[in-house]
Length: 187
Image 1 (cartoon, rainbow, N blue to C red):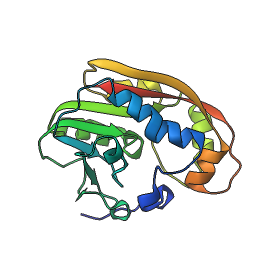
Image 2 (image 1 turned 90 degrees about the vertical axis):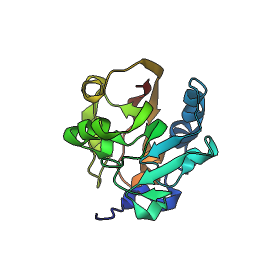
Image 3 (image 1 turned 90 degrees about the horizontal axis):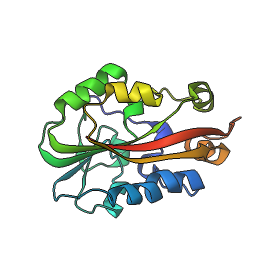
Image 4 (image 1 turned 60 degrees about the vertical axis):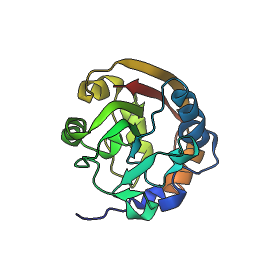
């Protein structure tokens, strides 16, 4: 297995930026979402890299292939088969193509799954701003088509994402503000 490092994610500093969008995405909204579900003892943070979720769920186990983030378990989330009561996928599906998303959900060994993911109805603006990175951004319709049966949508909020977020993540550039929607699906 090849260990992958996503340099634009800034290793262990990933998700710790101080701009308002980062604080909303990586802390405030996650805290609000987690209040809406029961948190079991056995929680896996699939693609959880640097373990930031541990601030809210101390017993969570981060599983990631990116060694620069120092996850608890270095493994490919597409084939990771340990059993958990809850698998959380926060902002991970845009790293995967459609076939990989389907494979991931086919292979996850968890009683429940929580998906926290941004969606982009304006894909042109999202791709234009996401310079020097290769990701799979999706509209709400495109994302829902890849998910297993959704028990409940527990979070749905639009927000504006702009220059400071992209500069923290990708460096200096000509970024334009655009709208995204953050959703949390309980599967």
